[in-house]
Length: 454
Ligand SMILES: Cc1ncc(COP(=O)(O)O)c(C=O)c1O
Image (cartoon, rainbow, N blue to C red; front, side):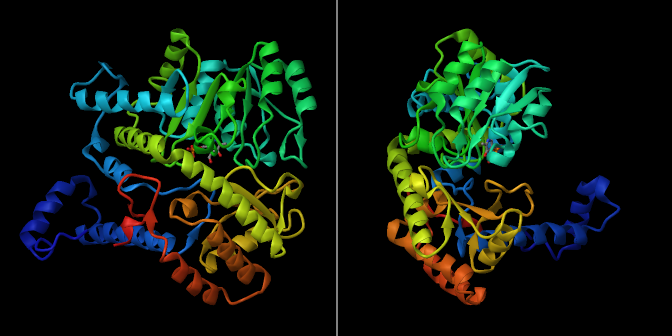
């Protein structure tokens, strides 16, 4: 921002120029205008989301208290190590924050161990793989074509760890690993890690039987709950730690509604195992681990203890309601036989396989004020021209929308994609509708959801 009163003074400009040292080859005015342009774009992005229906399944918004923690002085601080065992001075208050967060996390995830330092779901996966495998070992996982995450693939964390990847047989009707064939594959491959969980995640993984097969051959079981962590903790999805997972990884900003970050979770009571997991985060994959976000996670955990079960329940009931309304209006919604969804996601098909119909639909929807992402569906082979959309309701739910509003949202989809109405006219109505839903709920001190729009 331009600081009023300083911008016109040549003296202050000279002083500022002196501070810029290495950037002297470009002009001060041009750099300042770039900075201000960026801030305008930040504001415009906030306005875009505030006036639209954000339906990306991996996204969420911050509660006012979490936002305060994230915007705090902790942003600039370091605290390598664990509470009480630091390499830096100045960490006493942060020790209290992290210890409190760890204790809340153990209650929220009902387990003996949580590391709350990891800076993302991907980093949690890298850390878990580092703890539980060696380069050259085998791993079994869901393929990206079937909804597995890029960190489960050679292009991501699995490749970084140098593992030999084998992907599960997939049951397309049930949208889950084929239990018999996958268990057989695990017994044959004898991996060090059997990894479960997806980015496209409609139904709980049939984990128990597959975890049994993995343990039989000495493999560790990792359940990647990045997407569904809030639903797991809210008791409305599945309970991986009781169904055979040795480690659960996750993002802290999807259905678990905290700041960007990750968790490493286990119900093991073995201190040696806890040390291994902690070491795989620091020093294994992080040095500074974003203290402001750890504080934000600790606040979000306290809020989750109070409001998380209701939030998780409402997310799933909204996803089901949206799927039913879309199907009733003529959309091809996947997994009808299983009730469409048991999570926060809904999948819709908009044309032939590999036709790019999903991409086209996502563009039309954005012009109509609805933000979604194109997604590969069973039969698609090209990530950039898939036939489907993945829709998520965590953000709309957090803003207080319920089943009635899901029907209204489905109606906007119909107008934009089936009735062929002018997107600009749909957008006008979407924006009017959205203006009644701008307050973050399921938190202490509900407040403005899109503060960067000012
Ligand atoms: C299954 C799965 N694992 C891991 C991740 C990565 O999470 P993050 O974006 O926090 O790195 C994602 C992201 O969407 C995911 O879907």
